[in-house]
Amino acid sequence: MFTLSQASYDTKELLKWGGIFIAGLVIIVVFIQMFLMVKEIIFPTPPPKPTVAFGKLDPQLFPINVNNKKFTYKINTLSGYLPAFDNQIKVYKIKTFTPDLLSLQSATAKVAVVGFTANPIQLSNTSYQWNNTTQFGLSQSIKMDIVDDNFTLASDFLSNQSALSGALSKEAATITAANDYLSQINSSPADIDSTKTQTSFFAIQNSVLMPATSLANAQAIRVDFFQKDVNSLPIVYEQPNLSDINVLVGPNDQIFQAQYFYQTPTKESATYPIRTSTQAYQELQSGNAYIASYDGTSTTVSITDASLAYYMSSQNQSYLMPVFVFQGSDNFTAYVPAVTDGLINK
Image 1: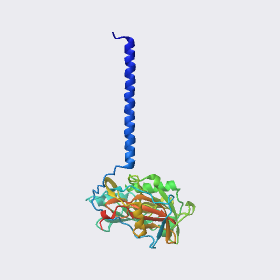
Image 2 (image 1 turned 180 degrees about the vertical axis):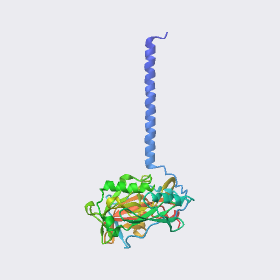
Image 3 (image 1 turned 60 degrees about the vertical axis):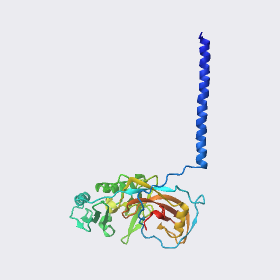
Image 4 (image 1 turned 30 degrees about the vertical axis):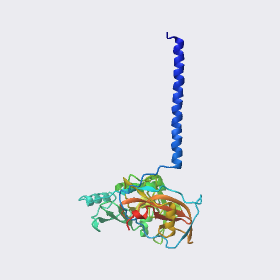
């Protein structure tokens, strides 16, 4: 006969063996995880091979070095060594544009919003120029590529005393004025990182634009807009700490000049093998680098940092590609192409 005491005993036995079973499963799972961790340390799983889906890439386009000295280098990082990076990285396709019958009409409407209402002057198949005189007597000209809407604005501000009279706005207001100007031409990209926006002060001496130390002795403020990081890496331009999207703002928030050269990275990407930091350093030593900045006089440079970034040229390129960025003494900055030579067209 099944009694209450028998049921209690059976229940306790069931709970005991059930607990033992569950504890055993936990121990087995923990053991397997520890085994896999040790295995990854001793015999790590190799990463997938680079896809190289775009085939061979055209070389990156760099300007002339800012300094043609033959440098010698020494590593002076905090660790005493160059950092290690993954052996492959994503390369992104850059958005391309095709002309259509309404390109000129669209460009004309965009520049008209900022005062350029005169008839355009054709400079090439895709480039046009518009001229304008502002209410402050500033003579301006804007050249725009009607296919991709990239443009350059110039004016006679250096010799125009009427335009130079008046006070500059504070930095925050100047940034707003610069951003508003781009927005009026529909040229304020969605991938601009506002936290990276930089301002720099300039004075005018003998009709020459010179760096100024503060707002108090400045006559113009340059605003540089930077694109957001891609693949957790920053985008760098030909001039370190400067961008190809910039606006020079004068007194009364006049727009003295502007450069807008914007290329859009798409989400279409492929992985490519890259040099090691040691190999990139050897390229730097061999003179196979773009020297982007240097303020010193010595031919010996201490390399204090090395990092990876994506380089955005001021010329049209089909792909956004990585570079090693070497930084050192006396504001030294150099870029070394990161993708291995065998996958670059010569």
